[in-house]
Length: 462
Image (cartoon, helix red, strand yellow):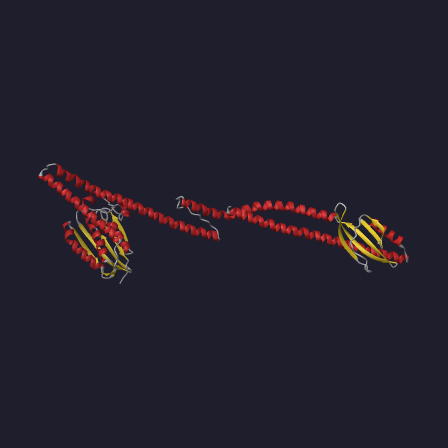
């Protein structure tokens, strides 16, 4: 049974119980008030009869039983009593209509006793019994009044109540269903949102805009869905990156391996001239070196984030001096100069990883300048670490490639990168090292003018 149906049934049941109790109390109260009015009317009538007999006795001075009967007959003819009985001792001296014995007896006092009876045909009526003493004789006067009208009125009220009850119950059912539908609408939206998300529509939100507990639940649900969407998208992105990584890695392995196997088979199966043999061996050697470079880069890439970081105080300026000194000879062969501007200071870092970072950035800058040029290296101390800037005078990077630079195996110019033995892992490794130091890496480039790489390492100051 749905929650909406349970709310409607509970509301209908509450309406039915409350209206039944209220209607029953109202009908009963009205009926009892009518009976009280009839009783009061009967008492007033009895007092009037007694008073009339007293007046007649005072006027006549003395009157016998015939006079009493005559007076009662006159009263019965003029009054609205349906039945009258006058009893003297055990003798009924006058009777009109049906009278029931009520079990009361004379006690020497003038009192009025009220009793309810059902006459023939179950007609309800009220009977009063009065004991009258006249001329030392005691008479019993019983008067009966029909109550059919009061009971019929009660029956009519019950009928009206029943019809009103069913109409009200029907209206209450409609209102209750509409109210339950309105109250459970936010829950249905939440349920739909959960189904949409379960079916894969992670961007769906319930967006319930009310000021109650359900709206609070909706906001919590939407925040959960948003976080779930972020995590799923991150997992998808990671899976896509891994897929691209494996595809690129396979391609990187396939190309040199195909060349090596082809030239090796050529040397094995055919007799070549000395020059062709030398060319084949040179090509096999160069492709083998590229495979070696690829394997070393892969090793660095996978080992970097598994290294047990032992952060310690180190001078970034000293690291730059050390790296540039060791690369000086190689860079001079490519007609590349390095100019450094260093600021003294010490910050927290992992020196070996930072050296790897510097070597990759400088090597990329060297490869970008085919005709030679100058690489500018700047070290600045910042509030929570250091900033290292490497700027070259190379050919620059197209704007559409800037956002992909840190992806594994991504290369701006694939043909020239292979010629220079690049595996496309250097900047991906740099990005990983920077993030291990809670830092950032940014690229700015203008084609034909050069590229600037800004690295901030935020391991903290000593």
